[in-house]
Length: 62
Image (cartoon, rainbow, N blue to C red):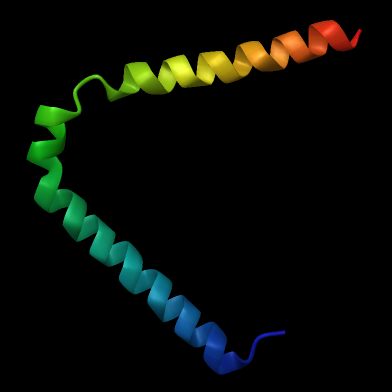
């Protein structure tokens, strides 16, 4: 499906992308801690909402 050259390029690109994201995050970690303190609450609310939708779907299916 993919040639060997394409697979090698994809692997190298993925590794370079991950390394660049790690460096970018480490550079901005202080800013993230200051401005995004309550993010986990939003994530928990979102997961709870999706869970409730699933429960309602299962409840009304029966």
